[in-house]
Image (tube, rainbow, N blue to C red; front, side):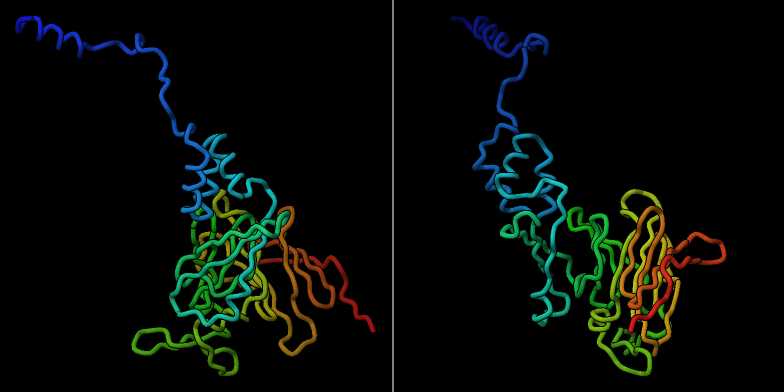
Length: 280
């Protein structure tokens, strides 16, 4: 065979072929990965990536279920009790356990960014309300790892920050008591609740109970607004607050229930839904 023939054979072997003559692609795809490989991949992922993993396709979803990832709408239970007994190094990464309510033997470890988790004072719409190392509140979504900083604790008149050479050293609370920056928030906040998920693109509101006060902040605002205060030396205390059907509701130790409207131009207004009564 001469040179011309060789060139002709080479040219024919690499000629362009139109896509319609190739037929459907029948090679392997990501959804065809063996289950043992998918399970091996899952063990290297954090909880947020595992949830995303389960939504790729039916095969990956089945692998995630087999691995133990809860793919239902059943809420999870989060425990951070072990953090109370630990003297965590400031700036250390925190890991908490998430438990499936229908199978308490299944636990998932979730890591949080450094310094953002000293305590937790609420959970709403998939978001956690955490106390960071400066005793400020942050909203954190453990699945998307999104964090939103709320106004600082020094917004409240009862808390004063003390600086040393430009660095925050400690807080002075009330009548002059000194508290470390990462300790004040462990008892200052009692409860926090959200009106809706901040990721929905609508104006969300956070209401908190802190000691004898009830305060709130709206999305985009940089200051806490005080809605109500109870007498410091009185016998009543705010014990809980919830959001339902467009309104916040608060309840006190003595059973007083209040409905709040935070959209009034002259400030928040309230209606009493249960009379203030005493039982002896």
